[in-house]
Image 1 (cartoon, rainbow, N blue to C red):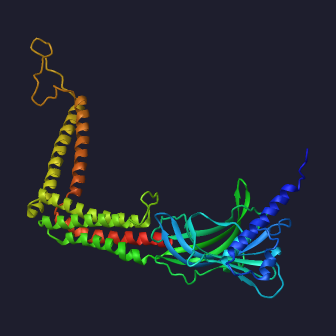
Image 2: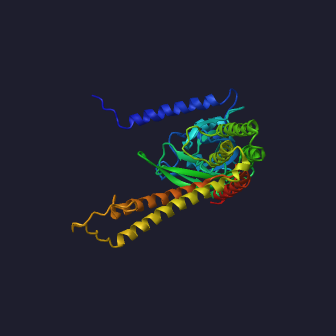
Length: 461
């Protein structure tokens, strides 16, 4: 029985690999064109399936970015779309050649070289530009350094905290990792630190300004091992001017418009009701329009929601104010008669004082009768004590002790009734027109104070 040597499978693999590489190389070269001798020499014996320094430690890959544009930043999807130029540099000892000039190759020849398996973490959708050809760049230097550049448009997720929207700041990231090579095979680093990323200084966005950006190096830990990771952080601050003109100013003007009803006569019911209802409906429409650009299912209570809620409360309060004033007017049709409303309460107090005084006098007289000695009955002609006929003023019907306790209870009840009447008298509106006069000062002053607290909290705290 013939025994197959252990080196035979490896020999077969290398043999077919050489045939496959030659077929690819010949397919990439157009008819009538011949690769330069330098390229042919470099490709001879080159295996793109093996990374550089396969047996001599990990290969280091330096990276840099150019941010060409940030097209959209979506709060609904919580992501951003950017076009970037990704440049990667590494050294391959198999590509060392003599000379002092670099070789710029066609991007389609990248299929013949080993390249890092870099991918963008949290990418939802990405594509490589291919007009008019695939936007790739391959450049080989005499010392074996390879420069590989790509033009990519990607949509990356960005977790946003919308609590202070539209006065918020968002920090988004662009993370680069190796898909298959762990830290024992490949190491990533930024070529120039924080200056490895350029293009943000000249970038102009619609609603944001880039306040800060920096880079960091990390490791991604998965079940299959630890992988190299590069992170680019950039901080975006939202421009509030658009929202001030679009939302804050109109809502504040609607609140001021609702105060116009305070200067309209209470007898003009259609005019005041029309202003109140119109401002409430307009404010409701403004609140619905302000949420169209935000997620529907959002657990955040945003700053703009708080302000719109405040404005809606003031507008609704102005409508309720007229309802209260009109209700008081219906119960006091004659304002001149209202001037005497206080005398009625004084008369009630005088009557109550008279009742209490009378009862107190009766209680004192009964007490004196109790303390005075009772005269003995005169004897009759027969010598027996006679029966004295009861006088009309004699308290024979009820003992004095039984009369004192009900009197005290009555005094307490009358005192409680007097306190209740005084409290009702304090809440009594003598002139319903005073409600509008107070509202002309109270509503604007309260709105100014609430605005000061609102803007101080969301801008400086």
